[in-house]
Image 1 (cartoon, rainbow, N blue to C red):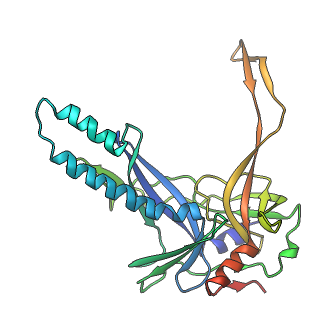
Image 2 (image 1 turned 30 degrees about the vertical axis):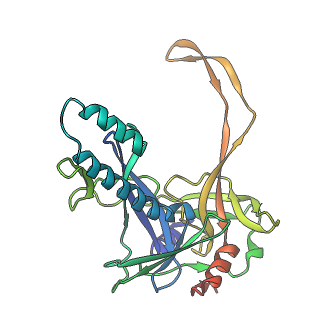
Image 3 (image 1 turned 45 degrees about the horizontal axis):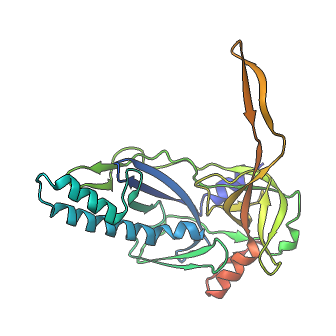
Length: 295
């Protein structure tokens, strides 16, 4: 049912790849999603996704200072104690994230500057890319014109890039740095998920700001479009809520692999949360960003 719509939305939906490194040396890949609203290099995504940009700068700068101070330590009997003191100063432990690198995939030939605007209350942000000469997305979103047509039971779909499969990165022990590489798997496949509208979410003033879906939004789909069978955009995935169903089982006896055992289960229903189309259009208009509505 959504075959054509998914193809259409993937023309303007793109992944954001991240690599994070812990102080213990583990490198963790991650993904997020954004989608373009015009041909001028402007996209929307989640505020928590955009916040990765200053977070990466702060983490990387702090680690560079840490390495600079570490390199000044004298390698003598007091080295380990002095290093522990330095780790305490920077609040580093084995699991602490110390580096974060970000890459916008298949968006432009080059990016010289990124300007972003974050919504004051919603998990919503506008991202303006500067300095490119060629766009690598081939279309842009068309938003539903009249949101009154969004009702309970409406069957919709979301897409994004929730499962990182790329491995084009490495840790360089000589530089003590993580970096992107030219080899390896450079992409992660898109992953759509359908569902029906279950409820609406209101802001502090009682105005509708969100759409709840019967199925979860997946990690990495944050910033991806919510759309109908025509590819018309109704909102943007930003979170998943976990509703306790109350069908709890405690120490229930079952037979598994020919053996009796007792299990406990506390089930939850995982429902997706999407930013409603109206505040997205209002925020774009507030910043004088051009966008189009479906005919």
